[in-house]
Image 1: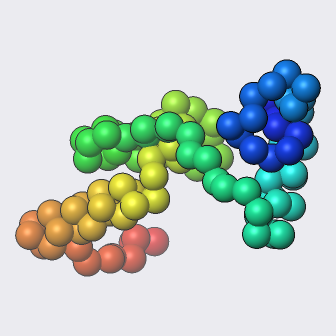
Image 2: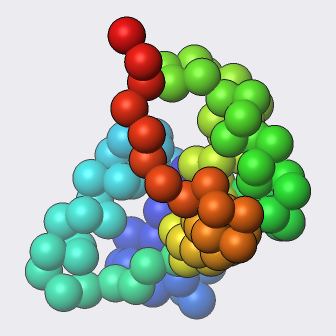
Amino acid sequence: MVDHRDREEKHNHPSNLRWLCKAHNTRLGAAMAGEGRGRRTRQYNPGARTLAEYVQAVTQHRRGAHDEAGRIIHQTPKEKRREFAAEIWRRRRRRGTDRWTRAPF
């Protein structure tokens, strides 16, 4: 990853740039955040765009599996996952399937 030595992203002179591995860049960012310096950048990871995409990913994903469905779930922003969960529960309440039942043994 490209890092700015003086921590100013607008200073793109070659003498101000250096390469860092992802681990060191993350560590440096965490240290700066702890000092109250720098700013967070956002990556664009859309995840599920619709409730249907999210539900499909959730039903296909198996816990602990590193699969495409898990990637979609984890890339969906937390706010969007909350929206989807609220909508799923609204629909379940309308159908009367919002009660938790113990599995028979």
